[in-house]
Length: 204
Image (cartoon, rainbow, N blue to C red):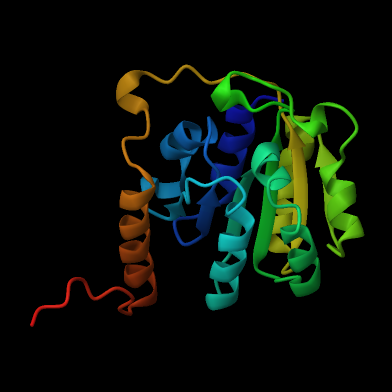
């Protein structure tokens, strides 16, 4: 299964009213081009290991919205303790999807532990996550993603993907960074929730 195909399938299942938290790596450009509605409903912390924890906080704060963490094996392995928190909280409006290619692709491709014996879905289950799965085919991914997004229960899915990047043209590459993403994301939530979160600079 290719990352681009899984991202496309997920985007077709999502809506502009859903909220996403994305890891760094090739998923950045894929999701930038495919996100539902092309709106600013995705935040990228730009720090490995912070994706699922950020998504959990968001899901707790906005329990009426679907929240999806677009994780990677490299990111998840840098904060395995979050699995215990996810298993304890079992936030029903949160879905974690780990795009697992077995390598740190952004820095040249050294292997992660999932390329050998580490099973992230089994680790999540052992940490108390009640619904976990691993899928390797696009049809299975699409079916599981649809189920997880619509079952009103916390789900943790590992999507085994092939290494490799989709060849986006330079003008299709995501032009923003984590700082800009943060403000665009906050303003988008303000619009959705009809509230004020960040009031801007303080003027005396």
